[in-house]
Length: 90
Image 1 (tube, one colour):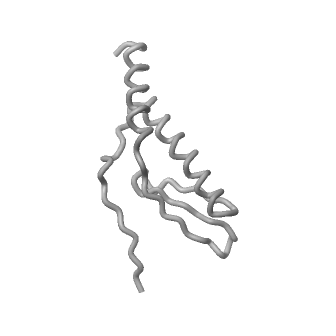
Image 2: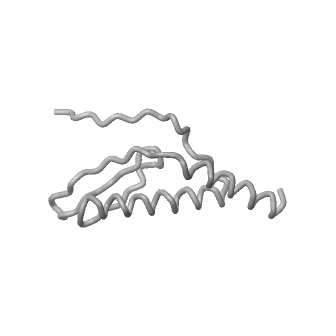
């Protein structure tokens, strides 16, 4: 595949992934006084922030970075219709 075709393929994958949504698990870590997030569909990609909104903004940036790197490296993304659940076990 030529450089031009690779660039076109990368751009197509990034455009397709830009409209995707991802489920994010958000939890409060009281021992470190931060909010922690996990993105199960992306290998439990994780970020944190001092506030819930800060953590989610960090997560949004991390997802975009992941998608950009995956597109450049030709790494396939998980299916958009994957099922996730958060279940409380006691």
